[in-house]
Image 1 (tube, rainbow, N blue to C red):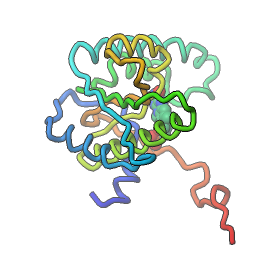
Image 2 (cartoon, rainbow, N blue to C red):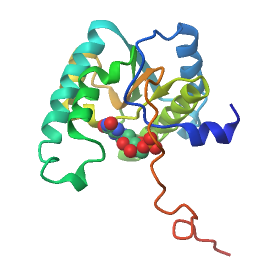
Image 3 (cartoon, helix red, strand yellow):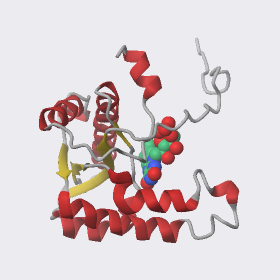
Length: 195
Ligand SMILES: Cc1cc2nc3c(=O)[nH]c(=O)nc-3n(C[C@H](O)[C@H](O)[C@H](O)COP(=O)(O)O)c2cc1C
């Protein structure tokens, strides 16, 4: 797939086929993530590939988070970026994805470093999602599951010297949603040219 086609085709996927992903493709995607730029070239990221029962446990926990988070959505439909029940169904099983990827970074006491580490890991995260798209796979950048970070830390044995940055299911899309419209497609308000 051509580079700009990959950029335009990437969508947040929330419904997956159950087909397993070849290990070499997972490694290819994580290799793309590992090639991201990073502050001071510290490459502070790590990746957890979660499948099986641990993945199911994470899903049940995220389902409860989404149920709680969306409880006023029926009364306030403008808040709902997707139907509430659909969102809960997705969360409970991570959309049926065969794997879930967790991106970690080294924790740093200095907020300046901490910010740079999170930014570096975010670059890795986007590389990962684009590489997945290029291989016909899909994911969804998620920070919602971090609402119960303590649970994630326990189930995944994440030590205190690591931050959890984001989570993404990974799998073959069953449903590819329409592109979300850009707020300023012509870039007339988002770009300023200065001389
Ligand atoms: C930092 C960040 C956090 C996000 N957290 C969640 C989340 O917790 N759950 C979820 O379903 N989607 C989450 N998303 C995905 C956004 O909802 C999605 O990117 C947005 O609606 C645009 O859709 P698109 O990715 O298909 O272009 C997150 C995206 C980003 C960048």
